[in-house]
Length: 266
Image (tube, rainbow, N blue to C red):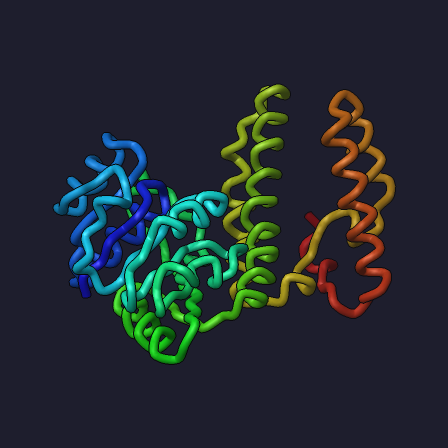
């Protein structure tokens, strides 16, 4: 298929590379910033434009890969008759594209994507369309280059996005503030890498609740108090430690049969 990519950020870059590697033709990249549009177009061996007024009208699929807040503005400038137009956002309804074309939908990558990364991670794609033909076409198209393709409504996609924020964005924030804590305490954050990797590896084989470890799930209040003492000079970390500790204790009080934490007393 012939594809136009609107956007030059992480999602536009990574999806553009994947789509092209699968044998589809990227016939144009459009971006607000001329240099960025030219740069991505060069990577994808295609042409570029800095305004949707100059959009190539010969594509089969138009992918709007811009920030959530910019989708509506971009969509308002597009009149593509019966061509398929999609955006790549989780928390924006497909109907924001209703004025663009008779056929529109969503193609949301459920993955954290960084354009500078050397290797592209597995990418599950959640698709939706305003009619059966669009859904079928998008599913066939995405199956060529995505690792998993599922149909998900606006509501389902939004709920999964909430889950994604917890497991990715919130987790990374915890890594961020602990990396700063380690630096201030003259500790090496990278000594935690094996622990982080093992925690993720376990999730592939066990229910998360069954492998929860730590002083909170054991109700080891002596250790908990020692941790609180260490964190006295870190009020924000201390507040977060208390919140999460209390939440874990309350959760396992209600679900006492879920954890096998006795095996690993970390």
